[in-house]
Amino acid sequence: MSAQHALWHPFADMGAVDGDRMVITRGEGSYVWDDAGRRYFDATASLWYANFGHGRPEITEAVSRQLRELDSWNLFGYNANRPAIELADRVAALAPEPGSKVFFGSGGGDAIDTAVKLARAYFAQTGRPEKVHVIGRAQGYHGTHGFGTAVGGIPANAAAVGPQPPEFSHVPFDDAAALEAEISRVGASRVAAFFCEPVIGAGGVLLPPEGYLEEVAAICRRHEVLFVADCVIAAWGRLGTWFGIDRWPLRPDMITTAKGITGGTIPLGALVVAPRVAEPFFTGRPGAPIFRHGPTYAGHPVACAAGLATLDIYERDGLIPRGRELEKPLADAVSGVAGHALVAEVRAGLGFLAAVELTAEVMEADPGAPVKLQRACRDEGVIVRNLGRGVAVSPPLVAGDEELDLLASALPKALDRLAAQV
Image (cartoon, rainbow, N blue to C red; front, side):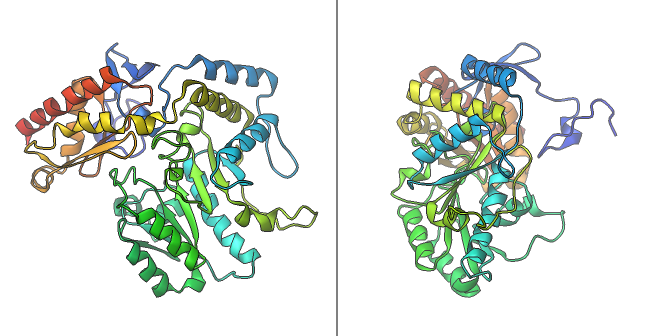
C-alpha cells in the first residue's frame, strides 16, 4: 500500500490516482490552474455546481462578514439564524408552488434522504402509514447516502455494500407506462413516492422523451404518489430556469436541490416542500407532529450567507436564462464528433450539459476508455468528466464562445488520441 498521502478520493481507483493526482490550486471564471501552473477550461463546473465559475469576491465577502457576525448556530427545535430564514424565504418564493417550505441540509444526498423520510412521514400523518414504497429510474443518480443509493438506478453504485433497504424498485428511465405498471404491481396503496431527475445527470446525461415528465407527474397524481423532482444538478440555471423542473408546467410535491445553490462554494442542500405535503406539520398550533430528522449543519448561517450572495449573483448577472440560451451553442460545439468512428451518440440540446458516448466496440475493447478520453481532453486543456460509457460536460454559465470553441477543438483531438490507444 502506498504511503504517499492519506487522502481517499470518492469514486476513485486509488491505485491509479496515487502519484497521478491533478491538484487544482486556483480558479477564476471558467478556468482553473493546477499545481504546475497549467490552465484548464473547467467544462464540468467542477462537479456540476460552479454555475457562475470560480473566484467570486461577493461570496468571499458574504462569508467573511457572516463569520465575523455569527460563525455557527443550529436550527433544531426553536433555534434559528437570520441567513437561514432569509434564504428559505427567497428559495420558497422562486418555487413552482406558492407557500412552499424549505428544509435545509448539507448537500444533495441529505436532501434525497430527507425527501424519502418525509414522503413516508407525510402518509403516516395522513392515515396511510402503509405507503412506504419508493420508485426510482434506471440510470438515475440520487447521491450516495443510504436511501439515495437505494433509489438510484446505477447498479455499480450499490454493488459490494450489502443488501439495499427494502421497499425500493426501479423502472426504465424513458417509459412512463412502466411507472404505471410498477405502481399497479406494488399496489398504489403502498407506493409513497417516485423520484425523477428532469435530465438524468451522473447516469449519462439522458434527456427525457417528449411529454415524459408531464405523463409521469399525471400518473403520480392519479395514484396519490408523491412526485419528487431531483433537481440537484438541473437547478440554478443548468436548464435555464431556477429549478430545472419549472421548465415544464409541473408542480412537484417536493424538489431536491443543492450544488448551484451556493455555486459550490460551501456545501448546502435544500428540500423544497409543496404546502400540501408540509401542511400536517404546520398546523399553526402547539402539538403538531414533529418531523424527527435533520443534519447537524442544516441551515448553517455561513452556508446560507453564501446562498444569499449566490442568488444575488444569479439575479444581477442574468445567469439563470443562460442555461437555455447556451444549449444550442453547446450542442453545436459537441456535435462535431458525432461522426467520429469511436462515438456512438452525442446527447445535447436541453440545458447547458451534454455527453459523448463511446461505441460498444470501444467499451468492449477497453472498459477504461472513458477515463482515457477524459485524460486526453485534459491534455488538450479541457476538463471533462468520465461517466459510464463516455464523457460529460456541464460548463459554468459564464462560459462563452472562446470556451466552447476550445471544447469543440479538444474533443476530436482527444478522440483521435484514444483511437491510437484502443
